Amino acid sequence: MKKIAYLFLILIVIASCDDNSEDLNSDISVPVSVMELQPQSIEKYINTTGTVQPLKDVTIKSEVGGNYKLLKNPRTRRSFVLGDYVKAGTDIIRIEDAEYENNIRIKSLKLQLDISKQVYEKQLSLYDKGGVTLSELKNSEVNYINADYAYEDAKIRLKKMHIQAPFSGIIVELPYITPNNRIDMGTELFRVMDYSKLQLDFNLAEKNMSLVDINQKVRVINYTIPDDTLSGKIAQISPAIDPQTRSFKAIVSIDNKELLLRPGMFAKCEVIVSSRENTIVIPKDIILSKQRGNTVYVIDKSLAQERVVTFGLENPNEVEIIDGLNLNERIVTKGFETLRNRSKVKVVK
Image 1 (cartoon, rainbow, N blue to C red):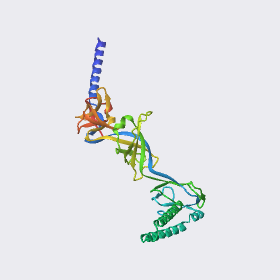
Image 2 (spheres, rainbow, N blue to C red; image 1 turned 180 degrees about the horizontal axis):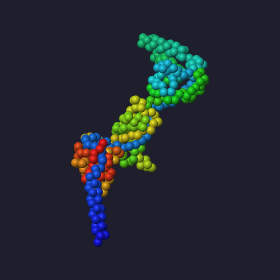
Image 3 (cartoon, helix red, strand yellow; image 1 turned 90 degrees about the horizontal axis):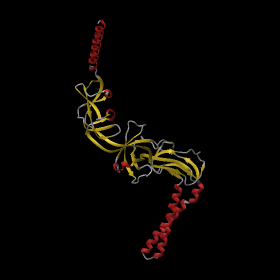
Image 4 (tube, helix red, strand yellow; image 1 turned 90 degrees about the vertical axis):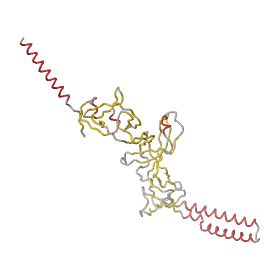
């Protein structure tokens, strides 16, 4: 009898402890962080990557042989070096060869041109007065034209000794050649690039062909310039689908006037296919996939309420909510993993 009374007392104590435990658990508040839903904008875009290349890039080779002379940069007053900016038409290298210049006979050709011009003008005047025949006039005109051709050809040949930048850009290659050393025709002298505008080739999946078009906006991002996003646009689209990869080629033109991107850099592109303003947008990483559907938690009077939401536009990081949430509601962004519907919560930073 004493044993039964003792066991009964123990059961009462255990029951009392369980009740206290349940009361204690019912008072626990889960710490969470929240954000208030305000109107935002969202863009749907296609991610792709590629290597940027300059629109203008040329390697200049010597067209004549002779003694090599690297000229001075008029801006820096020192010999040209890698990285120098040059304007179109700037002399960079001079090829010297006295024998080559003498064989051109530029002075005599200029004199011959002046004489033939005077003869032609005189014959033209005499023809108007009946002093020469039409045949004589035409012969003098032919001589004048041939002399002009010969003189212009001589100037072109002489100009080959003055190696100029064909367009404004940056010297990116400048092989060292000993000054006054003789070089042969076809020697590589320098390489110049203009990368104020770049292009990037990439391939997109066949399913995206209907989503892209010429002049479509593209964001260009590189890890070396995390605080700067460059703007570009689709310049070309191939209509053909590669049967092996089921993809098509497109080319993006990039405005790089600040020269932030360098030729050969790897870049990420976001091809913007659609956008929406003044809508509810939330991060994707706070959405739970449950049997009922995509779920988030909102806070109402210190309780977490479960909401099933419907998606609109989305991108890799964010999604538009077209049903299930309202503006100005507070949505849980941290601590939602352990929540249940109507869990008690405490909002923390």
